[in-house]
Amino acid sequence: MSQATAVPGTSWNFRDYLQRFGILISFVLLCIALSLLSDRFLTVSNGVNVLRQITVNGIIAVGMTYVILIGDIDLSVGSVLALTSVVTADLLQKGVPVPAALGLGIGLGMALGAVNGWITVRFQVPSFITTLGMLTAARGMALTYTQGRPITGLPDGFRFLGRGEPLGIPMPILLAALVFAAAWVMLRRTRHGEYLYAMGNNPVAARLVGIHTGRYRVLVFTLSGGLSALAGLILTARLDSAQPTAGVAFELDAIAAVVLGGTRFTGGVGGLGGTLLGALIIGVLDNGINLLNISPLYEQIVKGAVIALALLIHRRAE
Amino acid sequence: MRRHLWIASLALFALLLAACQPVAGPPPAAEQPEAPAPEKPVIGLALSTLNNPFFVDLRDGAQEAAEALGVELIVVDAQDDPAAQAASIEDLIQRGVDALILNPTDSDAIVPSVEAANQAGIPVFTVDRAANGGEIVSHIASDNVAGGRMAAEFLCDALGGQGKVVELEGIPGTSAARDRGQGFNEYMGENCPGVEIVARQTANFNRAEGLTVFENILQAQPEIDGVFAHNDEMVLGAIQAAEAAGRADEIVFVGFDAIDDAVQAVREGKLAATVAQQPREMGRLAVETAVKSLQGEEVPEYIPVPLALVTAETVK
Image (cartoon, rainbow over all chains, first blue to last red; front, side, top):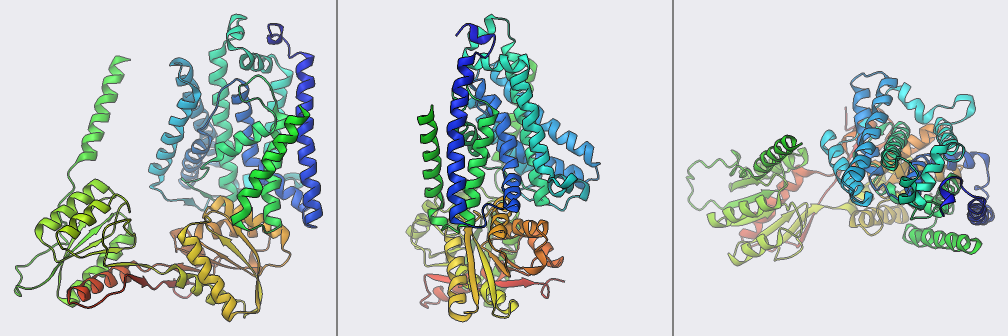
């Protein structure tokens, strides 16, 4: 384990590869099944539709992957999303220019994330507790800020974030792709990424070799908060409305995508490729349920069974 | 650091004090000109909150009915606080009101108050929200089944009795989803054979899910003529999905609840109709039922309050 802190060894990569392979099998099987069941599934427009739908969960799950990789958890993503969305929408309605409002919204998300990280590190509270507190507090602030009412009717410049299609690519997909690419490069191609793996594997050893673990933890939570805010802005732009009740239980979908993607819950092992596939499986599953018009009463059973099956195949491959 | 702690705890203390402020007694609504007729019955109305236009309308309806029937109405407002509500109901019981109309802040927390009134021999009625225990003479609330039928009738007419319709359902297992869906499907099945329900999916009363679920349904269904959603949040999400897909003009959307955003959408012509509750009617029926019961008449256990359709013609 000791040399693992320096470089992600080849044995890791091999295992990682197998894990991703396992989840890939599940994903391909699911797609084949849905193609056979519905002639509407395997079309370009439905493909774009699914990609657009997974952007919100996908972007949150990128931050969640980082958080889980270092052995932490962030339960506050949905509430941070709601609070930053309503504040940004309010600023927009008060006439703040779009770029400034976007910057302030994402900045607020980062600040809330930094608070999560700072409390966790400074007072040595488990992140489960810190972010559970933030989950409640940020939701309460979102409700108070809006008095429980949605903020509807936003400027076109902002709505471009949800509806725009530069070069024919929907904005949400473009943004999510950029987020995934940048996060992947940082995780796999810089020493910062190596440090994060090392911290998740063995935090004590990581500290001993001179990694500023506290600083990195705060940074990772800050990132998670900022990405939650970005996801919230996309959702708000798509709905033309910011809602104080948005994002309830979003942390569960994000954690599901990360864990389905093979990132180890205790940290140190996993990556963003798996998370992308995890988010895709959840998105395709939701899409398939609607395409096949499965009764809402059975929907959750189908969903649970498919996810359990995917995990099973995945563990087999491992 | 320590100084900050001080300030923080002071602030917290102030907040607590503010929260614990005794609730103002019966508001001015409880005007009591020394009654000329000595046997004028007194009815207590305990509302969950007056900080919501819905309940203000309910109170106004109750007051009008009380004046028309010559009874005295005492209104107390709990400001959404179950403890304050329990205290004010206790006051009403002490005062010896002849009947109590309760609009619980919480269906469970109200039970001890109902039981106390039962013990004092005061008949209890509930309005809008039910109580989960104690003896209730009658419950007066909106008729969601009738609302579902109303939406179906409107949609059937709007489509000329022909077309493909999508139903966006509420959270499975909730009474609102069950009743609204039941009324809608009963009407369609009985009176509108030309309309086919091509998809029935839940979007959990949620606007974001209304968007994504309807995006998926748009992929599955090349032709959709109408949408009925069990609440406005879902239908507003679905409208965004249809607009983005360029298909909003082909579809007649009908929602439920008449929330502000939905009434605005009706005004803008994006939403064809939404079913509204009638709080004023609810308040009127509550008082009338209580008076009937006091006069010794048998009253049913449940009194459905009719709903109303909000359309382009009713909003100006």
